Structures are given as C-alpha cells and as structure tokens.
Image 1 (cartoon, rainbow, N blue to C red):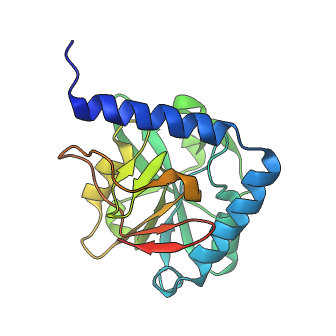
Image 2: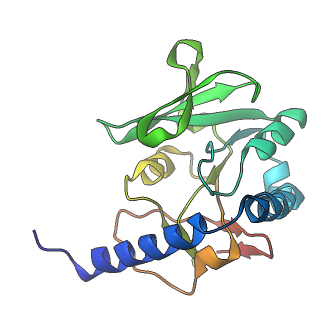
Length: 196
C-alpha cells in the first residue's frame, strides 16, 4: 500500500496531538474545558441557535457534558451522534437530559440507547459543536480519520454553523487536507475564539 504525503502528515499530527492530549491531567481538562465552554456561550452566533448538536466527549477531549446541560437549561434542543460504522455515517439523536442512559458504541464513545432515541434529519440542526485532534486557522479540521463529521457537515443546511472546540495546543498554523475534508467556521479554545 502506498501512502500519500498528506496521509503521512495527517498521521503524524494525529499521533502528536493524541499524545499531548492524553498527557493532560484531569484538573487541566476540567479547567480548560470550562474556559472553552464560557467562550462558546459568549458567542452570539451560538446563543442565537435553537437546535444544537454536540459530540459526547471521551478521554481527554474538551468536555461537553456541562455544555450540553447548560444548553438544555437555555431551552435549546440538543442532539448527539450515534455512529453507523458500516456506513461511515451517523444518526442525529435528540436528548433531553444528561441523566438519561447512554451505552458505549463504536470506538467506545457514549451514545444514546437505540431503543430510547428520537432520530432526526441533519437539516434541522442550526449549529454543530465538533471535536477534532487538530484544527488550523483556516478552519481545517483533523479528526481520527473516520470521516463521520465530514459526512455530517455535507448533510447540513448551508446556513448551519460549524464550530470546533479544542485546547490551544491543538490549533496549528496549517495542516494538509484532502478534498473530502470539511472545514469549521469558528474554533473555540480556552484562550481565544478564532473566526475562520
């Protein structure tokens, strides 16, 4: 198998960012996640949205549980993904509380139980809060390589907003992207909000 220089570069960035993120202490994760959350909720573009999709964080990703709880308190309709591994797609599931039961799905990521989920069309979504291992200032986003959020972004209405959340060290000057890689419009870190 022959790998392109883009694939090799992406792999190196993924490994470096995963290593750095995995090395964070729980206190760092919680403190920096709170700062990211405050930036998200200070953004007028975000607060104007009614139907918001979040990812369910795992490991040392920017924590979204508190963001989801806060969005629900703000009377937003909140959605989270359930991955469809064979199709490399996701279902958009509405949740009404972080107290509901979740199960470990594909890749060990929490997902709503299938039997208790209300699945909706991606076209209902006003904004997506997306994860990433790395972002660049032009909105380039590098995930784990499954393409799930790239697929989702292509399903959204044109005016739906795409936000990334990350720690400051996860934002790089530039990175290689493939033609299928979708960009975010804004990145929230603990120190800044980047308009892409």
